[in-house]
Length: 184
Image 1 (spheres, rainbow, N blue to C red):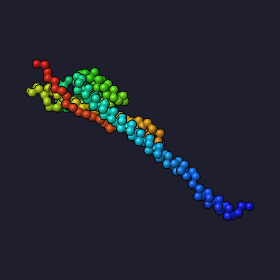
Image 2 (image 1 turned 90 degrees about the vertical axis):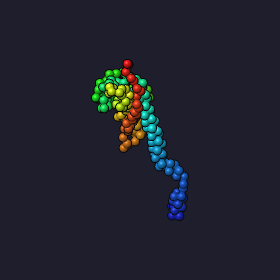
Image 3 (image 1 turned 180 degrees about the vertical axis):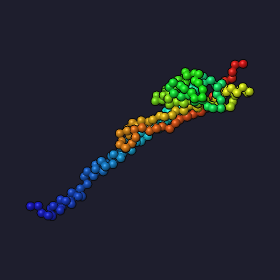
Image 4 (image 1 turned 180 degrees about the horizontal axis):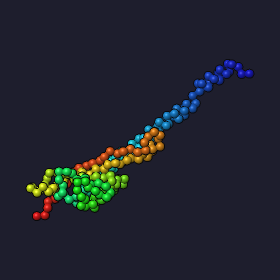
């Protein structure tokens, strides 16, 4: 028969044993460390995508400044004309040069392939600089916007309770176009 004293000593020895403590503690903190690491990588990817779309917007504006206007600038009044869509439609006017819109979208897609014509809005605004007395705009204000883009999570997609995507904010940039005077 095992004496009470030996049993008590065995229990005390087992209670004071520290073998495996580090492994148990590591197993308890490992999920939090993995979530923190994967979350940090995901935030880095979101920032990279944000930068790409922002740069694509700037590149689209540069292309809009170089290309012929999408609209007839003579029809530009105090109301801005906005052009958008894969089939290029303009509110407040007609699209006279859809090839320019296609070139703008193509230059933006060179930076971020996720951008489509439906995400791009090009707005022409009367800057007030016109040929004296004629009212014909010679220097429009051009704005290029990117809207309705979603960032699809790569790793955090698998974390229960989190959404599968994140809506990116709208990006826009504006610049005064070059002056084009009519032929005398």
